[in-house]
Image 1 (cartoon, rainbow, N blue to C red):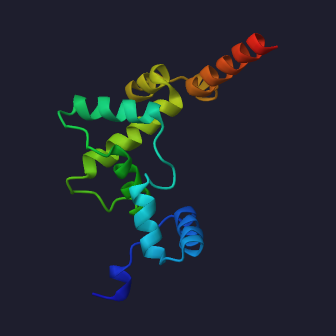
Image 2: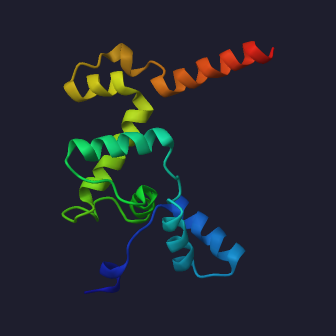
Amino acid sequence: MSNNDKVARVHSDLYEKAQAKAKAEGISTADAIAKLVAQGGVTPPTSCQLGHFADILAEQGLAPPRRPDWVWGVTDVLPAGMLRGTKLEPYAKARSEAELRCALGDELYGKLTTGELSDGEIFEEPAAEEAAAEEAAEAAEVTG
């Protein structure tokens, strides 16, 4: 086994964040990556993602982990495909699906998975962004 076989490649943004954390805290990059995993990775999950994550796991008959943010940390750190065939694979897939559902909204996600998504709908504003824009407009009306 060569040294290259032992090296796991990490996303460049994770590596940069880990280096900055290591320098700021005076620890090794490996320890900084471990801390990032414990904190939920580069991009900790949103409440929308956590909700869908739990729902997806329930649909598959799996219990959610005690620390779902840990799944985000591990999947941020490990290269794509490294979890294939492991006990963590369904959790990594559930994370991806949860992120996609939150980004698209339930209606567009349903159409995407059934093949009913039209070209016009592909270029529309995602439901999550649309809802946030509506909330911001309502808040502006109340305060203004």
